[in-house]
Amino acid sequence: MKRENIQEVELPFLDHLEELRWRLIKALIAVLVLTVICFYFSGYILDLLLLQIKGLEHQINLQVLKVQTIFIIKLEIALIFGIVLSIPIILYQLFAFISPGLRPNEKKYIWPVIIFASVSFLIGGAFAYLVIVPLALDFFLGLAPASVTNNIALDFYFGFVARIVLVFGVVFELPVVSLLLTRLGILTPELLKKYRRYAIVSMFIFAAILTPPDPTTQIMLAVPMLILYEATIWISYFFRRKEKPESEA
Image (tube, rainbow, N blue to C red; front, side):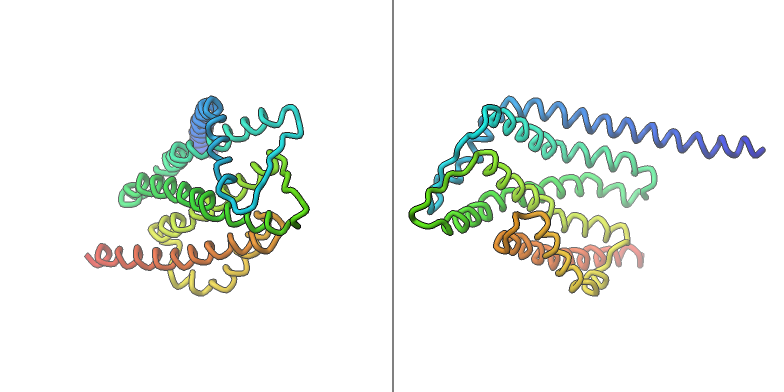
């Protein structure tokens, strides 16, 4: 009897591991395929990323200091965009894995959350590229004396832009997390308000870790995070209040 009970426990656990493995494989295949496709268009994407330097108030000269720089940058572009474009597929595989443990009224939010998360990431990345990156570049380039020419290595420029864009894309996922956790009954607006002061300190620490070591860029990241945190409180309040009629019924 004991051996049979052990087998009954082990088999479902191994089945879950096998399913998780296949979910991860499918997500990795999606990333690989989209990375290959993005590599083909990496030259056009690089040209798009370089458009921002034309509208800057201060002139910047980009330089290639290594033979393999362009190739490495194109690989990084392909991988980053491959992962970003794979976000809906990755999230779907995640939700498909945990869906057996969700209630029917919770499963109906899978696709809205996937779409909301993807759009939020794109909005955050676009906001960083169109607003934050030009402001940051003009600020830093303007610090140079008139006798100094701003000659920047292309890979340093790409790393600076990519880091800011990706960080803002991730930060803009806060409302999505708030919506999901509120619907699952884990998060409440009272809890968010209670820990607001701790969240503010954590955001500035988070911004200091993920941005270049200067206060200006840190503030540029921390301020939108504070605004988004306040937005998550309202989102949590709205969706929690929206569930009340269903519970009363």
